View 1: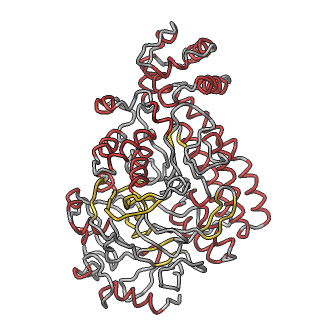
View 2: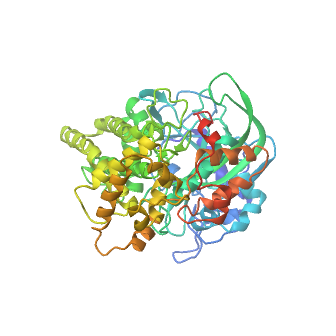
Length: 601
């Protein structure tokens, strides 16, 4: 493969052969070393031994090999890398014939401060000792001030359909993929900075993120992770890793960032922040769409082959129907993902194709919201004037996005495969419905099968809609109340959501149906039911008012509520004294109804 001279020079420099404008972290310490022999304990070139509890980033093997080849071996490429943007200057432009542009993060001008870090991610995923967070190297690394030797900062080129219309080239306009790490369990994680400066994909943006949105993203990542949303492929070793993306750290600066938060001409000064986030992959539907729209089919095929080989191991690379199997998996897992969102009352807010992961994981937290009162028309994003992404329409939007994925794949499919793919897409609705039903049966403590279960669920949701009962606490309080209390329609005052629901004239009818159905649970008891239900119905979620309270304090350099929420959200199913004292399980305050969030971040 031909490499532009400037990139070849950069790779030589990265391996210690020359000087550059910014020395990589630990460049003088010889991170890449040649092996001593076939049985030597030293790592191969470009690889350092994975060890638990590394306290020095110089012993931490972050790399970009899987995306760029192996640079630290006299430029001998052991892998087939993706072509890189041949233009090295960092300015907004239309980019073609590549997957990534090499571009450095832009550090803040003012002093930076680490205000939050995930100990679990640090130790259990990145194999680093907690003490590393106190080092200057660590702070510089997570704020974009330094790169680690062996890694190459990249911005990803992608496109997408936004609010139903093709938007053309989008890309990482304020994000940098700063390396790939394979931990001691063999899990591959991609590390990305967000808010770290301009890239060729910044369009008219400044490449920054503000503290307001960064706090929300950090906390929502924690919340979704511990709620189990999703994916089962997010990690194989730890049973608690079911989530989408992980926010590793939150760094704040005193740099001024100007934002028109509600697009009403009221531009305000806010504080800049950077989050470091992890995902198994940042490729999304838009990653394939941009290549199909640009007619770069050979590159699209290479990217698709890479994604399948790296993230869909059950699909054989020599399978002539491999692309069809890939599409079938994405369709099924996207249906599962959205059903999981619905089961916890989560509205993503901007379900564009550039925000939908090919691994069916939740990415790009923006104007999201957890629903308070049950309302199928709930829209967390005030920028969504047409209410396209209301919570009750998320399943339909998922279908739309998958249809755009199929459209991008069709040039790579033969006529028979195109027909089969269309049939697979037609099965999306049934898959979603099955998953949704099973999740809500579990939330209600129902065991086995009964033909009336769907009606029982729909009946309850209608009562909740009519009475505007709180979504989260209705299911949680059904998990805590006894069957005897329900039978007598004796709702204690502490069960405020059920008291709201009980005002409906048909509540007693639903309770009768529900108790009869619970009696059909074989080998069950009321104690078992309540124990089972409290493990799937959270007591605490990241409500908008809670996030807003933390943001307001953070703007005054008080990060106590950020830390409190981080701790509380790690155990959403357990009653916690600190959470009860803070009122996190009480009726939302009246001022919460006036809160607004937008795409501005």
